[in-house]
Length: 261
Image (cartoon, rainbow, N blue to C red; front, side, top):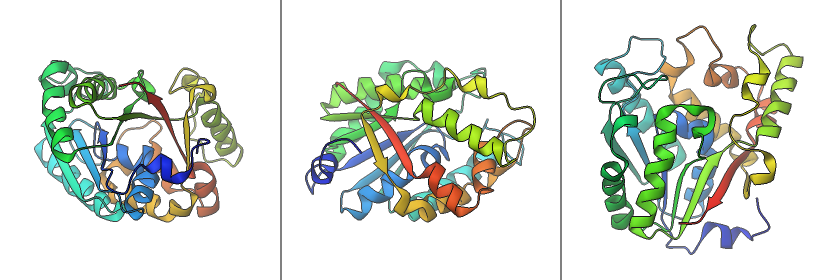
């Protein structure tokens, strides 16, 4: 965590937190431990999913049935994390290449921001989370979340905006460790991550979530559809295979960059 005390970091006891994510399962990877920590501290915890996840890689074909399955998985994950409210904005998953007709990444930012701002005002949110400017690894829906949340936070005058990200330096160290124990899938080039997320020097909040490792893993397990599909590196598949001591070490910190609203 930063040099702030836990009380200052969490906000006043009546401070609601709103976590905004592009797809069901993003919360389990980036903010699950923080969500549980915030919930246990008695703060109202809300998670918002921008898209239905219907175009994501999965162990079943894309489309309405996958969307329904991923919504059910998101609800199961949110229950594990202690969320008080789950909201689905209902936009179409744009797909990794952003080529799905009518996808979220093509929605006017002002239009989506107005909807989200109404929720932030309704919740009297004290904190809202989004993603870093590159959308982490560049997914067009993640980049859109970055832009939409920033606009909505300004409109709603939300006091604190935290961008969920990963310490790039730490990520590369972890990948080398995973590779050393033989768990990195064949053909994965670590240099592809050299421009993902943000460098460690830009991180403002390092949140210790080692205590919530089992909860974070349970959140990941809720997203069963995302453990399969595709031939490349699947993050959930990889993390679910790790022995718990290694999982706790790798997933025991969550990172944020504080931005001016």
